[in-house]
Length: 422
Ligand code: ATP
Ligand code: MG
Image (cartoon, rainbow, N blue to C red; front, side, top):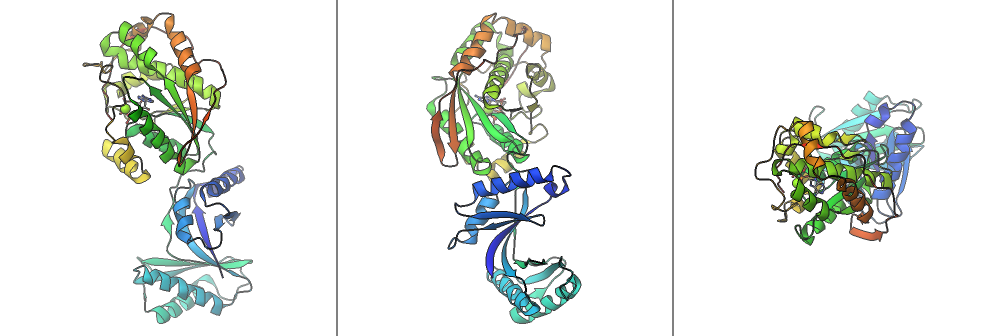
C-alpha cells in the first residue's frame, strides 16, 4: 500500500488533438510546485504524485492546491494488482477511519471498475464496501450528502483508494497559453487580474511603473511581494521595474490635467509592449474594471486601448470590488495590497479627471508631448530593470539586454481621467 496524491482535471480532458500538450504542461507545473524529489505521472486522466518518503501528504496537497488545471486533489493509496476484495476493503476502512478522525460522520463509496476482469461490478463494489465500512467504523452511509466520498478506482495495474479531497484552483496549466505581461501596481486589482490571466495558462511577466521620489521604496517592495505571491502559483515571475518619473513629469508639464491619467496609461501600454518584445510575451493584462474609476469608463478604456498592438486583457472587467477583494484574500495578495503605500503620488492624480473623453481629445492631449514622447517610451524601456521573483522573493537581478524600444507612433489629442486607489 503506497500513499500518493491524485489530481483530477476537467477541462484538459475535453481537449482534442492537443490534449497531450496540456497534460505535459500540467505535469511540469505540478513538478515545479511539489517538494523536491516528488515524482509525477499522468495516468488515465489523472495526475499521480508521490512525495519523497517521510513528507506528510499535507505538503503535497498545499502545493497542488496552487496547480492550475487541477479541479480536485485527493490523498490516495495504491494497492498493486492483484488486489482482492479483502485488500480493497481494508484500505477503504482505513480511509474511512482517517476521515472519521477528521470529523466525518457519514460517507459513501464511489467505486469505479475500469478493469472489467475484476469480479465485482461498480454497483456491487459500492454495496459490499459500503456495508463493510459502515460495520467497521460506525459511520453512516449517505449517498446524497456524505461528509466524505471514498473513491475506489479498480484499474488493471492497481487499485486506488482515495479519501477526502480538496478543491484545486481549476483553470489551465501554467505555460499552456504562453506568456503575458501584467501591469502590476501596488493596488488590490492588478494582482487579481494577473492571477486570473495566469489561471488560464499564462506564464507571468509583470511591469511596475516606478516614480521615485514620488512613490517610495515601500511601494516597490509591495509590488515585489505581490509578484512573489503570484509566483507561488505560476513559478518564477519576471518583474520589470520601469523608471517612470520622467514620463510622469513630462505629462504633468504638457498635458491638460483632466486628461493626464489617460495619456500616462497610453505611455504605460507602449512601454509594456516594448518589454513584451524582450520577454516574448503575447498579451498585456491590466486590473481595469468597467466603471470603477474615471479611467475605466468605456470611453477611457477605448482611448487607452487604441495604442495597444497586442491583445489587452482585462480579466476584471465585469467584477465588483467585493468580488475582487474576495479573490485577493483567497490567493494571498490582499494583505500585501492594503499596506499603506500610495501607488501613485497625489501630485499626479487629477482633481477632476475626464470620464467620457473622445479618442481624438486624448490624442490631441498626448500630442502636446511632441516628438519627445517616443523618446520617453524608448528610455523607459531601455532603463527598465528585470528581476526574477520566486515565491521567496527576488532571486536575481537579471541584466537586461539592450533591445528595441516600444515606441510606435505617438498620436495626438486628448481627454481625461482618473482617480486612484490602493
Ligand atoms: P490597482 O488596484 O490594480 O492599482 P486601480 O483600480 O487602482 O487598480 P488604476 O490606478 O486606475 O486602477 O490603474 C488601472 C490599471 O493600470 C491597474 O490595475 C494596473 O494594471 C495599471 N497600473 C496603474 N498604475 C500602475 C503602475 N504604477 N504600475 C503598473 N501598472 C499600473
Ligand atoms: Mg492602482
